[in-house]
Length: 185
Length: 444
Image 1 (cartoon, rainbow over the protein chains, first blue to last red):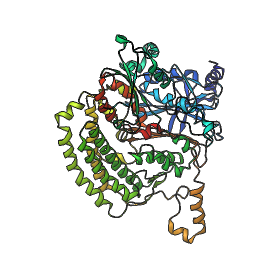
Image 2: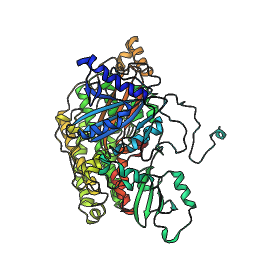
Image 3: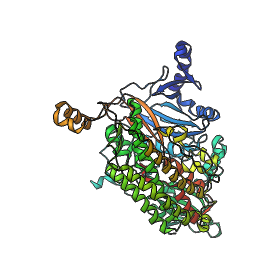
Image 4: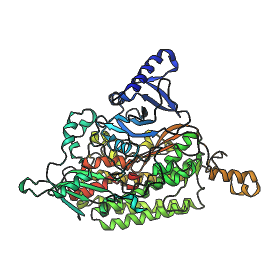
């Protein structure tokens, strides 16, 4: 896996830390941003699984949600802390701690030319279907997932519908076992 | 038990991932039945048909159940690996109701968004509207008036009652208590009649909207609520006689579909299934939203994590919801039913007749929608099935840039293969029923 971009992200984050001083809030060695009073940590893609390990050990006992966003046509401010380079895709996971009664959100940047992220299945098995859904609809591949297959779309579907460049209103209805959509029109 | 299609197969179906799984640690080790998750593509399963019969080496059989099976609650399909009457491994196959609602959500304005989300969990539509509205309000940074908050709470608790009544009906029918089907439906219908009076519709109300609710409660709503609160306790007592205390009912449910606390947490299970394992986790109490701080209710937990606990918890939750509704009757404040913020609220009907500006404003809000400041937010509520979450990314426009719904049914479905492991197929029906999945929400 070519991790050049992400290593840069990590390095920059570490370099920036002393410069930013008190302005840069950190949690679990990751820069923190706040969105509507919700805490969001931004982790480099190659430390995604490592972060999950740390979070589980620190009492975040449930990964409640995992989803993804395609920022292809997003023009507004993405609210990324300094040092985090924006990429096209983003995987977002929400964690919950039953003991503390708190939530935490983690975002990681995924470049368009290498859409691979480590699977959290081994650490939080509850992400099984959620990762399959993200793979199905957004085309992000989770390495080491035990069964990375489509879940909502038919198995032989082509394309990932939630991507912003996926044409809508232009696809003839496909049914399972109907291989030739062209003849339908 | 009707099996729609039978595939005869050999034993050695997909073992490849099992060795891999053994190397993993962390929460995965809390899943002793992880091997019960069947991971086989439909193509592979279809190839199995051509496998020759092989005498004594034939030990298990692949059977397809659903999606048109009456006990699979809509269009859930299960691929079951059977060893005689016993389920060894299973794979829920979903997606038959997938209509791209998250994609659709990016094309609808925030005001239209509720018409979309309300169709996800069609047994508890008001919760879907609520979570979408709360996420939108969080992004805009508006606070809804007190009365709107309490109306939302009233409607949601009534919806929880109707949703659990639906569960009572279907759970009873699945297990052969066919009269329960009629009883549960009858009581649910009474609640839906109340919804019809308030919102105009029995389902898919589009009643809770960003900024408040669509209309104030109609005259005489207190009488209607009191009528339900008077009627239901007696009917619930009948359920107790018909089901809870019955030895046959208990035999069918007790010790069936057991899931441990560690398994439930590892699988991100929420709602009555999580509470049946003894985890007292209810967002209404632990992360209060609306005005749940101001009402008294108990979080009902089980101790065995079996299908009976899940049934009993839902029955008890109906009673708890009635308790909350009773308190809402006393505490319902006066005031506005929607926020008077010209940004999100259309002008009142009377103003449109006399003011050109009001007419334009009204037109703009319903055609262009209102702009929502950029940002991202995750908001969640306790739906009858567990944590219902909504993640919205806004780019400052009138439509969500990305709208994701975390459906509790979808995530809870992961626990099904673990519960079905080494259960009889007949118990499988009880287990599917006790998970109470709503496929509209699973597939979205």
